Image 1: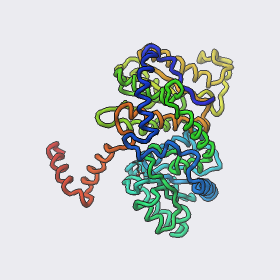
Image 2: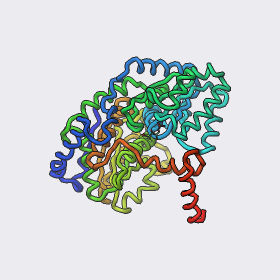
Image 3: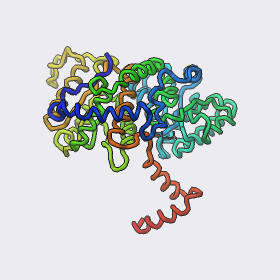
Image 4: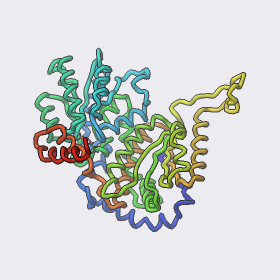
Length: 449
Ligand code: PA5
């Protein structure tokens, strides 16, 4: 079954005529997107990434993944934001959040360069000790501080362990086609490279080598992911809210936002979806959060978070709506047996699969939250397969793009991300930031710091 959007729980919050009234605005947003006339229209390459545009590169990518599987115990993936979250979400979703610890015949995958924590870097180095290593550095600009610093360390380690030539066979660079310091370095050192297309921004790059190389190394079927993406490109190309679940979702988000719902919780009932929640937060946060606008995206994993944040959702400020991802079947179910003593009074569950209990938790929570006045919509998929992953990613991308245009922002830029970088460079004394440093020092003094 393809992905479906269940809107039947929204009756108390949105009337059918509201969807009818918003359709012309969705039509306009759709037209901006598909005619490529809206803001950020030079970043629309993600709209038709599947099947792989560069078939030769895709074949080389799959061959490299096999080579890495055969020659490495650990693949170190260096990248931040859109340059790592998609791959991380995919590996958790398709394999497991415990991927590295579980028995498997593919390399461990560790993600570094997404923080400036010395402890995280030291631990990553420790995890690599005595192991055969490959590195995949992923950076479109090649200059992002976090991954660049981590790469500096891992490049030195690789050259120490394998020599310059050996390292050059084990360092894979995913970066711009022609520009940037990483591309220049790769060319001079002979590192294999994969291209991040010019017209695809980081958070829309899961279906490029950014996501696909680490995902393939983890043993997932990248052909099936791209096939699902190709199908989703067709399904979600229709302008009609009635026929296009991605647009229905974008329209409903927009209507709920206009009614004061300023935060969306992406809910799942599987720990394997926690990182998908992180990816979704970046996609919507970076795309919509600008010009003083946007829905605040957050995520929760139930029932775990029902015991921490459930109280707020049920009875706290009336600002939330929930988008629940419901997965019909687990990878493997768990049968609940009867206990002769029934010491915990749980024998009423005996003879059931745990997935059934999880589904009842979902339904019970949904009804409780609806009663608490929280709008809920449900995205239904069959299982945690390559197909549903490809569909989900494209569904959110399409909804986010159209939602951004409905909101009146450019969904494809991220000017606000630069602010912290400039301050950090000034405070660290980077050449060229002297004036800003003086100004920041003055501000810190006035704050008594
Ligand atoms: O979505 C984005 O554009 C960002 O999250 C970038 O992916 C992130 O900042 C990393 O940038 P780069 O790939 O240039 O190192």
